[in-house]
Length: 352
Ligand code: PEP
Ligand code: MN
Image 1: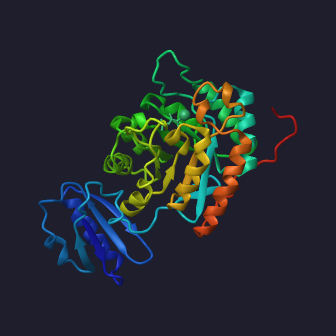
Image 2: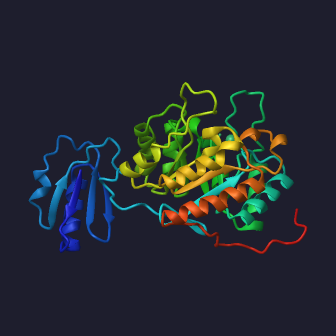
Image 3: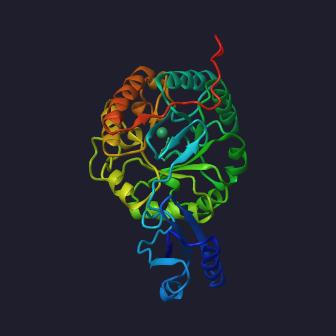
Protein backbone atom coordinates (compact mmCIF):
# COMPACT_ATOMS: atom_id res chain seq x y z
CA UNK A 1 0.00 0.00 0.00
CA UNK A 2 1.23 3.46 -0.87
CA UNK A 3 0.44 6.54 1.18
CA UNK A 4 1.11 9.73 -0.72
CA UNK A 5 1.50 12.74 1.55
CA UNK A 6 0.17 16.21 0.68
CA UNK A 7 2.87 18.55 -0.64
CA UNK A 8 2.53 20.70 2.50
CA UNK A 9 2.54 17.76 4.96
CA UNK A 10 4.82 18.32 7.93
CA UNK A 11 7.59 15.90 8.96
CA UNK A 12 5.57 15.15 12.13
CA UNK A 13 2.57 14.09 10.03
CA UNK A 14 4.80 11.80 7.97
CA UNK A 15 6.25 10.35 11.19
CA UNK A 16 2.77 9.67 12.54
CA UNK A 17 1.85 7.69 9.42
CA UNK A 18 5.10 5.71 9.64
CA UNK A 19 4.45 4.91 13.32
CA UNK A 20 0.97 3.64 12.49
CA UNK A 21 2.31 1.38 9.73
CA UNK A 22 4.92 -0.07 12.08
CA UNK A 23 2.28 -0.65 14.77
CA UNK A 24 0.43 -2.84 12.29
CA UNK A 25 3.51 -5.05 11.93
CA UNK A 26 4.27 -3.83 8.39
CA UNK A 27 7.58 -2.69 6.96
CA UNK A 28 8.00 0.94 5.90
CA UNK A 29 9.66 2.22 2.79
CA UNK A 30 10.00 5.97 2.60
CA UNK A 31 10.54 7.65 -0.75
CA UNK A 32 11.10 11.38 -0.56
CA UNK A 33 11.01 12.52 -4.18
CA UNK A 34 11.16 16.07 -5.46
CA UNK A 35 7.43 16.19 -6.05
CA UNK A 36 6.02 14.03 -3.27
CA UNK A 37 6.69 12.04 -0.15
CA UNK A 38 5.48 8.49 -0.66
CA UNK A 39 5.32 6.04 2.22
CA UNK A 40 5.17 2.38 1.29
CA UNK A 41 3.51 -0.05 3.70
CA UNK A 42 5.02 -3.40 2.77
CA UNK A 43 3.63 -6.75 3.87
CA UNK A 44 0.21 -8.39 4.06
CA UNK A 45 -1.85 -5.27 3.37
CA UNK A 46 -4.70 -6.73 1.34
CA UNK A 47 -7.02 -6.98 4.38
CA UNK A 48 -6.26 -3.48 5.62
CA UNK A 49 -8.85 -0.90 4.50
CA UNK A 50 -7.36 2.21 2.91
CA UNK A 51 -9.57 4.27 5.29
CA UNK A 52 -7.13 3.38 8.06
CA UNK A 53 -4.78 5.94 6.60
CA UNK A 54 -7.04 8.20 4.58
CA UNK A 55 -8.21 10.17 7.61
CA UNK A 56 -4.73 10.91 8.95
CA UNK A 57 -3.42 14.48 8.89
CA UNK A 58 -1.23 15.29 5.90
CA UNK A 59 -2.31 12.25 3.87
CA UNK A 60 -3.34 13.03 0.30
CA UNK A 61 -4.00 9.68 -1.43
CA UNK A 62 -3.87 6.05 -0.34
CA UNK A 63 -3.34 3.60 -3.17
CA UNK A 64 -2.89 -0.12 -3.36
CA UNK A 65 0.08 -1.35 -5.38
CA UNK A 66 -1.62 -3.89 -7.57
CA UNK A 67 1.54 -5.58 -8.81
CA UNK A 68 2.96 -8.48 -6.78
CA UNK A 69 6.37 -6.79 -6.73
CA UNK A 70 6.06 -3.66 -4.63
CA UNK A 71 9.45 -2.04 -4.11
CA UNK A 72 10.46 -2.76 -7.71
CA UNK A 73 7.26 -1.31 -9.14
CA UNK A 74 7.11 2.04 -10.90
CA UNK A 75 3.72 2.62 -9.27
CA UNK A 76 5.54 2.80 -5.97
CA UNK A 77 8.59 4.73 -7.20
CA UNK A 78 7.68 6.80 -10.27
CA UNK A 79 11.14 8.29 -10.83
CA UNK A 80 13.95 6.27 -12.44
CA UNK A 81 16.46 4.87 -9.99
CA UNK A 82 19.91 6.13 -10.88
CA UNK A 83 22.61 3.89 -9.45
CA UNK A 84 26.00 5.42 -8.83
CA UNK A 85 28.78 2.90 -9.41
CA UNK A 86 32.39 3.94 -8.93
CA UNK A 87 32.88 6.61 -11.59
CA UNK A 88 29.60 6.36 -13.52
CA UNK A 89 25.84 5.99 -13.15
CA UNK A 90 23.27 3.54 -14.53
CA UNK A 91 19.64 4.49 -15.08
CA UNK A 92 20.04 8.22 -15.78
CA UNK A 93 21.28 9.99 -18.91
CA UNK A 94 24.44 7.91 -19.11
CA UNK A 95 24.68 4.64 -21.00
CA UNK A 96 26.86 2.18 -19.10
CA UNK A 97 29.01 -0.26 -21.06
CA UNK A 98 30.32 -3.18 -19.02
CA UNK A 99 32.82 -5.29 -20.95
CA UNK A 100 35.36 -8.04 -20.50
CA UNK A 101 35.89 -11.75 -20.93
CA UNK A 102 33.38 -14.43 -20.05
CA UNK A 103 36.01 -15.97 -17.74
CA UNK A 104 39.17 -14.61 -16.21
CA UNK A 105 41.80 -16.98 -17.63
CA UNK A 106 45.21 -15.51 -16.83
CA UNK A 107 46.89 -12.34 -15.68
CA UNK A 108 47.91 -11.26 -19.18
CA UNK A 109 44.45 -12.04 -20.61
CA UNK A 110 42.53 -9.96 -18.07
CA UNK A 111 44.99 -7.07 -17.98
CA UNK A 112 45.15 -6.86 -21.75
CA UNK A 113 41.36 -7.01 -22.05
CA UNK A 114 40.86 -4.43 -19.29
CA UNK A 115 43.16 -1.97 -20.98
CA UNK A 116 41.57 -2.55 -24.38
CA UNK A 117 37.98 -2.11 -23.20
CA UNK A 118 38.91 0.94 -21.21
CA UNK A 119 40.54 2.55 -24.22
CA UNK A 120 37.45 1.74 -26.25
CA UNK A 121 35.23 3.55 -23.72
CA UNK A 122 33.91 0.88 -21.37
CA UNK A 123 32.64 2.05 -17.99
CA UNK A 124 33.26 -1.21 -16.08
CA UNK A 125 35.11 -4.51 -16.43
CA UNK A 126 33.37 -7.88 -16.31
CA UNK A 127 35.02 -11.25 -15.75
CA UNK A 128 33.75 -14.54 -14.35
CA UNK A 129 35.75 -16.43 -11.73
CA UNK A 130 33.03 -18.84 -10.58
CA UNK A 131 31.51 -20.14 -13.80
CA UNK A 132 28.10 -21.80 -14.09
CA UNK A 133 29.05 -24.42 -16.70
CA UNK A 134 26.61 -26.93 -18.13
CA UNK A 135 29.27 -29.63 -17.88
CA UNK A 136 31.01 -30.35 -14.56
CA UNK A 137 34.12 -31.20 -16.61
CA UNK A 138 34.32 -27.76 -18.25
CA UNK A 139 36.53 -24.95 -16.85
CA UNK A 140 34.91 -23.78 -13.60
CA UNK A 141 36.81 -20.51 -13.11
CA UNK A 142 39.92 -19.35 -11.23
CA UNK A 143 38.12 -18.54 -7.98
CA UNK A 144 39.85 -16.13 -5.62
CA UNK A 145 42.98 -16.02 -7.76
CA UNK A 146 40.75 -14.59 -10.50
CA UNK A 147 39.37 -11.98 -8.10
CA UNK A 148 42.91 -10.87 -7.30
CA UNK A 149 43.65 -10.49 -11.00
CA UNK A 150 40.47 -8.46 -11.47
CA UNK A 151 41.43 -6.25 -8.54
CA UNK A 152 44.80 -5.66 -10.19
CA UNK A 153 43.08 -4.79 -13.46
CA UNK A 154 40.83 -2.33 -11.60
CA UNK A 155 43.82 -0.73 -9.95
CA UNK A 156 45.57 -0.33 -13.29
CA UNK A 157 42.62 0.92 -15.33
CA UNK A 158 40.25 2.48 -12.78
CA UNK A 159 37.40 0.34 -14.10
CA UNK A 160 35.06 -1.01 -11.41
CA UNK A 161 34.57 -4.78 -11.60
CA UNK A 162 31.42 -6.83 -12.18
CA UNK A 163 31.67 -10.49 -11.17
CA UNK A 164 29.17 -13.33 -11.05
CA UNK A 165 28.35 -14.85 -7.67
CA UNK A 166 26.89 -18.36 -7.73
CA UNK A 167 26.32 -19.12 -4.09
CA UNK A 168 26.11 -17.37 -0.74
CA UNK A 169 29.21 -19.29 0.38
CA UNK A 170 31.16 -17.02 -2.01
CA UNK A 171 29.74 -13.86 -0.46
CA UNK A 172 32.52 -13.02 2.00
CA UNK A 173 35.36 -13.43 -0.48
CA UNK A 174 33.44 -11.58 -3.20
CA UNK A 175 32.68 -8.64 -0.88
CA UNK A 176 36.42 -8.07 -0.48
CA UNK A 177 36.84 -7.48 -4.21
CA UNK A 178 33.77 -6.69 -6.32
CA UNK A 179 32.00 -3.44 -7.12
CA UNK A 180 28.95 -5.13 -8.67
CA UNK A 181 27.63 -8.64 -8.08
CA UNK A 182 26.31 -10.38 -11.16
CA UNK A 183 23.55 -12.89 -10.47
CA UNK A 184 23.47 -15.14 -13.50
CA UNK A 185 20.50 -16.50 -15.38
CA UNK A 186 20.80 -19.88 -13.67
CA UNK A 187 20.60 -18.31 -10.24
CA UNK A 188 17.84 -15.80 -10.84
CA UNK A 189 15.59 -17.82 -8.58
CA UNK A 190 18.22 -18.88 -6.05
CA UNK A 191 16.22 -17.17 -3.33
CA UNK A 192 18.74 -17.79 -0.55
CA UNK A 193 21.42 -16.11 -2.64
CA UNK A 194 19.10 -13.20 -3.44
CA UNK A 195 18.28 -12.74 0.24
CA UNK A 196 21.98 -12.84 1.18
CA UNK A 197 22.78 -10.18 -1.43
CA UNK A 198 19.82 -8.15 -0.18
CA UNK A 199 21.60 -7.88 3.16
CA UNK A 200 24.64 -6.23 1.53
CA UNK A 201 24.79 -2.75 0.04
CA UNK A 202 26.82 -3.78 -3.00
CA UNK A 203 25.30 -3.08 -6.43
CA UNK A 204 23.74 -6.05 -8.22
CA UNK A 205 23.28 -6.89 -11.88
CA UNK A 206 20.41 -9.38 -11.88
CA UNK A 207 20.04 -11.41 -15.06
CA UNK A 208 16.78 -12.81 -16.34
CA UNK A 209 16.51 -16.60 -16.05
CA UNK A 210 16.71 -18.82 -19.11
CA UNK A 211 12.94 -19.25 -19.23
CA UNK A 212 11.79 -16.68 -16.72
CA UNK A 213 8.94 -14.27 -17.32
CA UNK A 214 9.41 -10.56 -16.80
CA UNK A 215 7.23 -10.77 -13.71
CA UNK A 216 9.43 -13.53 -12.26
CA UNK A 217 12.51 -11.37 -12.89
CA UNK A 218 10.87 -8.51 -11.00
CA UNK A 219 9.87 -10.80 -8.13
CA UNK A 220 13.53 -11.86 -7.86
CA UNK A 221 14.59 -8.21 -7.75
CA UNK A 222 12.02 -7.75 -4.99
CA UNK A 223 13.89 -10.30 -2.83
CA UNK A 224 17.02 -8.14 -2.99
CA UNK A 225 15.14 -4.87 -2.48
CA UNK A 226 13.19 -6.29 0.47
CA UNK A 227 16.49 -6.87 2.27
CA UNK A 228 17.23 -3.16 1.99
CA UNK A 229 19.68 -3.30 -0.91
CA UNK A 230 18.22 -0.85 -3.43
CA UNK A 231 21.21 -0.96 -5.78
CA UNK A 232 19.72 -3.32 -8.35
CA UNK A 233 19.89 -3.24 -12.16
CA UNK A 234 18.12 -5.77 -14.36
CA UNK A 235 19.59 -7.53 -17.36
CA UNK A 236 17.83 -9.09 -20.33
CA UNK A 237 20.15 -11.81 -21.68
CA UNK A 238 17.90 -13.66 -24.10
CA UNK A 239 15.31 -16.32 -23.45
CA UNK A 240 14.82 -19.86 -24.71
CA UNK A 241 12.54 -20.19 -27.71
CA UNK A 242 12.14 -22.65 -30.60
CA UNK A 243 14.63 -20.60 -32.66
CA UNK A 244 18.01 -22.31 -33.07
CA UNK A 245 19.95 -19.91 -35.31
CA UNK A 246 20.97 -17.91 -32.25
CA UNK A 247 21.92 -19.20 -28.78
CA UNK A 248 18.91 -17.48 -27.24
CA UNK A 249 16.28 -15.05 -28.48
CA UNK A 250 16.78 -11.42 -27.47
CA UNK A 251 13.52 -10.28 -25.96
CA UNK A 252 13.87 -6.69 -27.10
CA UNK A 253 10.30 -6.13 -25.86
CA UNK A 254 11.55 -6.70 -22.33
CA UNK A 255 13.34 -3.34 -22.42
CA UNK A 256 10.31 -1.05 -22.86
CA UNK A 257 8.14 -3.42 -20.81
CA UNK A 258 10.57 -3.32 -17.89
CA UNK A 259 11.08 0.44 -18.22
CA UNK A 260 7.31 0.77 -17.92
CA UNK A 261 6.85 -1.61 -14.98
CA UNK A 262 9.87 -0.74 -12.87
CA UNK A 263 12.05 2.21 -11.89
CA UNK A 264 15.17 0.00 -11.84
CA UNK A 265 17.82 0.40 -14.57
CA UNK A 266 17.63 -2.10 -17.43
CA UNK A 267 20.61 -3.31 -19.43
CA UNK A 268 21.04 -5.83 -22.24
CA UNK A 269 23.55 -8.63 -22.76
CA UNK A 270 23.65 -9.19 -26.52
CA UNK A 271 26.59 -11.59 -26.16
CA UNK A 272 24.53 -14.26 -24.41
CA UNK A 273 21.28 -13.33 -26.12
CA UNK A 274 22.71 -13.93 -29.61
CA UNK A 275 25.62 -16.27 -28.93
CA UNK A 276 27.44 -15.03 -32.06
CA UNK A 277 30.00 -12.23 -32.22
CA UNK A 278 28.66 -11.26 -35.66
CA UNK A 279 25.26 -10.27 -34.24
CA UNK A 280 26.32 -8.55 -31.03
CA UNK A 281 26.74 -4.99 -32.34
CA UNK A 282 23.41 -4.91 -34.20
CA UNK A 283 21.50 -6.06 -31.14
CA UNK A 284 23.47 -3.70 -28.89
CA UNK A 285 22.40 -0.78 -31.08
CA UNK A 286 18.81 -1.97 -31.02
CA UNK A 287 18.88 -2.15 -27.22
CA UNK A 288 19.97 1.45 -26.82
CA UNK A 289 17.39 2.56 -29.38
CA UNK A 290 14.76 0.65 -27.37
CA UNK A 291 15.66 2.57 -24.21
CA UNK A 292 18.14 0.31 -22.41
CA UNK A 293 20.36 1.97 -19.81
CA UNK A 294 23.45 -0.02 -20.67
CA UNK A 295 25.08 -3.10 -22.10
CA UNK A 296 27.22 -5.96 -20.89
CA UNK A 297 29.49 -7.33 -23.61
CA UNK A 298 31.94 -10.22 -23.74
CA UNK A 299 35.33 -9.19 -25.15
CA UNK A 300 38.40 -11.39 -25.53
CA UNK A 301 41.80 -10.56 -27.05
CA UNK A 302 41.80 -13.91 -28.88
CA UNK A 303 38.25 -15.32 -28.95
CA UNK A 304 39.34 -18.52 -30.73
CA UNK A 305 41.38 -19.43 -27.66
CA UNK A 306 38.80 -18.39 -25.02
CA UNK A 307 38.02 -21.10 -22.46
CA UNK A 308 34.35 -20.10 -22.45
CA UNK A 309 31.99 -18.27 -24.81
CA UNK A 310 34.64 -17.51 -27.44
CA UNK A 311 32.08 -17.70 -30.25
CA UNK A 312 30.15 -14.75 -28.90
CA UNK A 313 33.14 -12.69 -27.72
CA UNK A 314 34.15 -9.57 -29.62
CA UNK A 315 37.74 -8.79 -30.42
CA UNK A 316 38.82 -5.46 -28.89
CA UNK A 317 38.69 -3.70 -32.30
CA UNK A 318 35.14 -4.87 -32.96
CA UNK A 319 34.19 -3.79 -29.44
CA UNK A 320 35.66 -0.31 -30.03
CA UNK A 321 33.63 -0.02 -33.22
CA UNK A 322 30.50 -1.15 -31.37
CA UNK A 323 31.01 1.46 -28.64
CA UNK A 324 31.35 4.11 -31.29
CA UNK A 325 28.08 3.07 -32.94
CA UNK A 326 26.27 2.78 -29.62
CA UNK A 327 27.49 6.28 -28.72
CA UNK A 328 25.82 7.63 -31.84
CA UNK A 329 22.52 5.91 -31.07
CA UNK A 330 22.77 7.19 -27.48
CA UNK A 331 23.06 10.74 -28.81
CA UNK A 332 19.94 10.35 -30.92
CA UNK A 333 18.18 9.15 -27.77
CA UNK A 334 19.32 12.28 -25.91
CA UNK A 335 21.82 10.29 -23.85
CA UNK A 336 25.57 9.79 -23.76
CA UNK A 337 28.07 7.07 -23.00
CA UNK A 338 29.15 7.00 -19.37
CA UNK A 339 32.59 8.48 -19.02
CA UNK A 340 34.81 6.58 -16.64
CA UNK A 341 36.19 8.79 -13.93
CA UNK A 342 36.61 7.64 -10.37
CA UNK A 343 39.99 6.34 -9.40
CA UNK A 344 41.44 6.16 -12.90
CA UNK A 345 45.18 5.86 -12.78
CA UNK A 346 47.52 6.48 -15.67
CA UNK A 347 48.52 3.27 -17.41
CA UNK A 348 52.16 2.42 -16.96
CA UNK A 349 54.28 1.29 -19.83
CA UNK A 350 54.93 -2.44 -19.90
CA UNK A 351 52.68 -3.27 -16.93
CA UNK A 352 51.52 -6.54 -18.36
C1 PEP B 1 27.99 -14.84 -18.17
O1 PEP B 1 27.72 -13.64 -18.05
O2 PEP B 1 29.10 -15.27 -18.52
C2 PEP B 1 26.88 -15.82 -17.97
C3 PEP B 1 27.11 -17.06 -17.54
O3 PEP B 1 25.67 -15.28 -18.26
P1 PEP B 1 24.18 -15.89 -18.10
O4 PEP B 1 23.99 -16.09 -16.63
O5 PEP B 1 23.33 -14.81 -18.67
O6 PEP B 1 24.12 -17.16 -18.89
MN1 MN C 1 29.65 -16.03 -20.78
